[in-house]
Length: 446
Image (cartoon, rainbow, N blue to C red; front, side):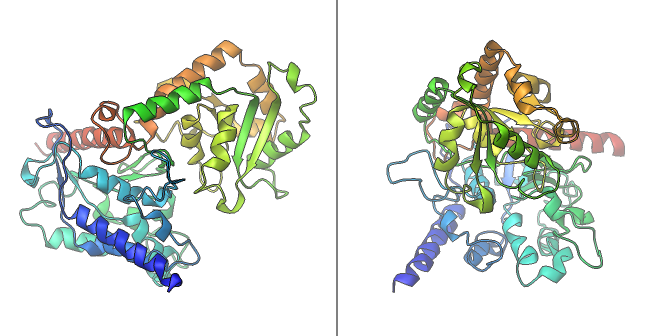
């Protein structure tokens, strides 16, 4: 009987999700200014979203994501008394975003009066059957069923009106996983969703966008911090500001253990060579370098492993891995730990809505990885050379960014909604992007 409990709980969570999503819950203040902000949520059959959650334990090569479904995708609380901290899996962003869309203050049932149309399609979750499941050899078909539906069930011309230019959706994977060349033989890793001509006009929000396609825009990975009210957010910011920074730099991650020369290997070598014998004379730091080993994903759903060390560090190293971006970038911002980037594609060329490109020098450090790996530049030397007063100013700027890169909890208090979070900024940027695109088309065809 005990073995059936997870299945029963998962079924219950999915039922509650379906019940919530089947209704439009708008708990925001009445009569907001909705000029140019109206959004229509396209009604999709449940096979495109909540039904996909029923397969949460069917991809053994990936992971069992059933434990991360509670609280509308935020996952289970880190402990029973926690109000803001959850064991959140990044793949659940599609659920988190869908739930938050139901609270958006400018929803309209009339698609013809909408400035944008949201497709609540869980594309990242749907991709699992092509990446790890039975449809691995037909990954070029990912998304075709959705396109057939929105085109054929198009009364009153929701899709045809702008040929999809006013539509947007969220896909909780890096764009590289969804951009396999069409009809590549033999197939390579990924699906072909973003290569389908049928979706070229749709704005797609992903964790990591490629540099050239128009339709992709990167949004922050969800972290484990989802405060429900302003008091808890301000309390956390106060704690971060007062935290004693006894470590100069920290790397939380895996990799870098093979013989191949790369930036992660260089970081491990540099930290391994640091004995911190004279660290007490190094601008007051007790440790110059610390590594939190997160190999094999052991940190992903356990924020306690890395948040405490991050709170004690001045700089958090963000080397690229399989792809340039990292969730750890946003974890470090929540900890007030200044991010250190080694590629511009890791953040500066990605999250322009949430972290303005022109402000990067104010809250981060950039060290070209080639200088470290091939020319022997020491990261410690660069960071030790930054004056303490500038470090303080950079940390204050990081704290300013914190609300912009977190996803607050659904049903949050009115006072917290006065601070734009990652969801608010993503929706605002999408609306502006679609408006600009439609204006360009109008000029072209008039």
